[in-house]
Length: 471
Image (cartoon, rainbow, N blue to C red; front, side, top):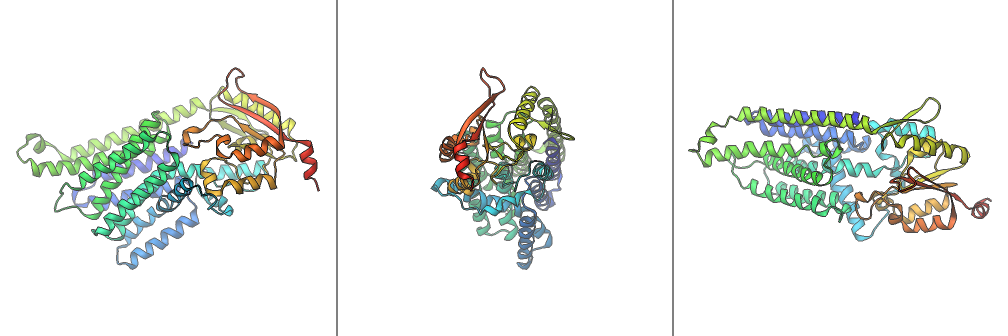
């Protein structure tokens, strides 16, 4: 989705440049305004439900106004609410449920929440029209993936907007930050535990040290929030670098807030050094405004390089395949894979009758689109987050009540998502056992028979089972 990448680049660049170039006397106001703009942009990008986000934002803004704060502060808080809801409620709840072995705490009708806004909303609506799907499902994986950083930073801003300069607000910021950390990382552990958790702990420890540095009459509450926010961004930087080193990967623009830590910490540190070491020549010669301009230039170059690399990589990795009359779709695994996928879709169109249903596990909505075959179940993703939200029992019952005529098992190992990973065999073993009893293998399609990284096992419901289900 390079087009959505560039949109987020713009929000990052605006927020971070303003943070670097803001006048010293107005740094708190501008930092908060820049943060609010970033939160709003990421909220749009993560496709948080419009009604939920707007209602929560307006409600929070009204509460802030009643408490006597300004409308500007209310607006900053309102922009942060969608990410705050995700990080302070959804992510910790899911992590807690998974750690305690609980499941199914999300109502089934919530499956349509996250499709109200965002670049993919129109695409998924198009998918539904083509494949005849009953409902799109939650797509919770993307929300976990993209909203984690947003919610984490929003958690640090909200307390500062509510009560400036109070001890409760400082404590609340730390507590909410810890909750967001647990929610964002716990569900992925123990995969890459060191690359994710340890850098974040180091960043929090560094933030605690920075908080003890005096700055122009002591720290104000927004200043505390700014440092905590920057520390969270630095943790994301280190974690993402340990996991996704490719500059075109979305992880690189998610970790861009780490540059905010460098800018804010350096400027505050320079101010502190001037007071502590007044005789130091290198301190006195430092031109703060030039440093800010240089930092903004670095940010601009960074965003530009990432945008170019992302677009170039997308073009290199995308091949076009024919999806039917009047439709052409991009297939991202690579140009060499496109023809194979087109052949698989053609085989499905010939073997699967138009009236038969098709479910692709653990995820594969594109197959439904290309084959023009609907799914009889409402869960389009069978991955760890979906299982935590909806529950193994509920998902298994869905398949048993409305069994698909065909089931396709993709040999797509997504274990990088955490333990248990994305392999359907590990996520719901009960479902796999039910499939073995109810279905028989018809054909196994492989891109490379000698050792493919991508394969599909097409299984059809057994005739005896199908006859038993006919009233």
